[in-house]
Image (cartoon, rainbow, N blue to C red):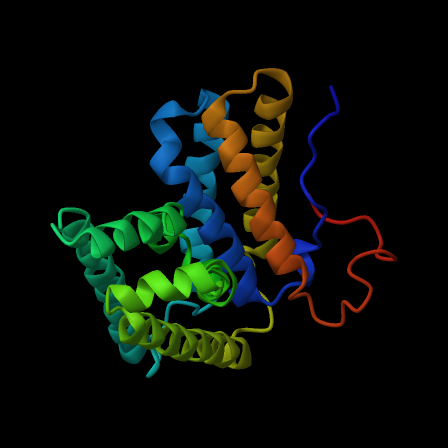
Amino acid sequence: MEKRKFTAIHVSQLPLVLIHSLIKSSTDLALPLKSQLSPIVVAALDKTIDINTKFGVQSNINQKSLLTTPINVLETEIKDLFAEIKRAVSYNLKESDAVKKAAAVILEHYMATSWELLNLPQDTRTDAINLMLQEDLMNREAKTVIATLGLEQKFATLGTKNTDFDTLYKNRLKEHSGHESSGSTLKPEVIGSYQDLCTSVEQVVNLTPDENTVTLFNQMDELRKTYHALIPGDKNNGKTDPPADK
């Protein structure tokens, strides 16, 4: 069986705010699975969370931004819209109107994997919602059932709110990058701890794989691909880069 390896990424070349964000997003993915993970992964996870929290404080990453409040408001509104759409589908599944009931069944099928998008880290969720709106729900059948259930405005508003959220979130990242310290003394330690976490996950999926760790591996690898593209000056997608950090 081919050995699983994480996508290569130069973590040290990311701005401090993105190093913190990559690691926090990775540990946030692992936390819900913690009770099912192997002891070696849990030990690496706990250490990484502790050091990354201190790293964020030292790098002033968690300082209050004027954008934080509107970002939080938009996040609540997006969650509310998802809940309203889900309630509408559930309600129409019980409808006596055969047309609406059939439409609800079809929309529920299209949305089957989308209800969990809100559980994704903020930095990857907006792209996932855009993909849902611009690809998954763009065919004629999906548009027809959405119209039948009177949900066109809900989905349109969701798209607008998601775009606004994405813009503000990225602006806050730029804001943090602009005033972050030139270097944090914890940077090597937090990167090393993240490398240990990745190594422990790799070891388990290759030596004693289980469903939870394989899921975590795949999700963490998608994050690495996303952040690799954010490395300043990376125009070759890593093809001519020197050996990457773990």
